[in-house]
Length: 511
Ligand code: UN1
Image 1 (cartoon, rainbow, N blue to C red):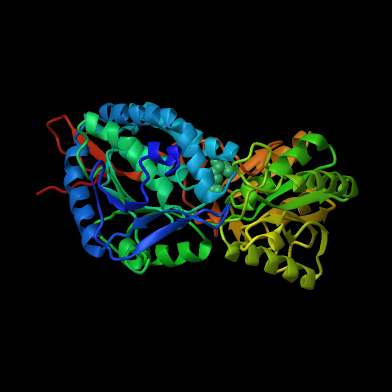
Image 2 (image 1 turned 180 degrees about the horizontal axis):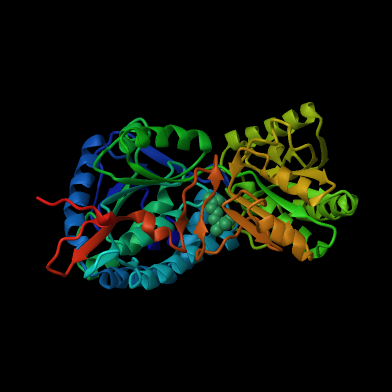
């Protein structure tokens, strides 16, 4: 076994269920974790059975009763120590993220840094779970609102950020007094197991009861619709495709459960004539090809003013030419673009390229598999630059791969309309040095996305802001700002400290 995997306590066959420090799993099937780098198995995970899940829910319910009563700053102290444990294992965990998911090591480390950052944020938040105090319309009355722990939070995460999304949700939920049941993507179960191993020492030292941080690796046929239908779980936070999110939130909505949805994006960058082009191009390239185009926030559309369109296209082609020499093994220092997660993902990339051509698009660069003839598998592609129109059906879709559609505009109003004219609403950006344009982009008639940036690309958000988007992106917000409120139940309290009983609205009810 690789010494890094050993340090992360990954074995050849791992239990897939944990309630904190304890591990079990009685499912008959195993999930193999296949590295997209070489298509080889890294290790296997024993799946959860339904009985295992029941055991986890029971433990989570019991743990919630204890955890919710612990003072929030004490919960924050546990999170602070989790942050330190993550610091200690940053290099190892970052390596495993790269090995199992395929993002370049620099980004794997960045992902673990996001986990550390949200721990720090959550520690501070643990002393700031505050509501408002209001003046009453009645004499000797006081009104305030307060936030209480909610219960069990179900967490469904995707392969592309296999550990950071857990941290955004679990660390905030934990300081809020909730307990979490995490079902990671079946493509990336080992990183989840490693995280659980990293935190287990902290949990033991602090006598955190089993059931606060739970992990369940299971097939969707065992734990899928029944998971989100479970009324014992008041809140689900789900990251995934719009199609999956729509289906699962429908099931949750039927029982009036709550959900935080972080679904597909179709993010655009507008480049205006006054933009600093060097900066814009650099940022667009990172946004479009970083993580091999597999971020929800990946730049998928580039809306360029017609007066600078040719210049921008030319600069992009030069940049793409140079980075296409840097496709390859993401563990190697020089690589900038790793593999896609699976052969299916490569096929979707190729299908989108052939479809956009049929719809009238013109490929300016790339759009082909990379070095597949020399391998028994095909996970690597040359990122594509494609001239297209916004209304093409394929441009309206999110293809989870590095394809950047170039679109021309004449007026800023038209550029904003193009930015908004897709079903999704996650991230957006404008590059301009014109104040009127940037302010218009950020105004109520501007970008309709959850994230709108000026002179910064669409991806690479900091944890301090609320993360999420509108329309088909699902409307959820997680991570920073006041997203913590989603993880708590809110209560309005009116207190009468007088000897009279005046009714609100001045109603008289004498008897
Ligand atoms: C995602 O792709 O699901 O803003 C999350 C970013 C990262 C998170 C992306 N901080 O690109």
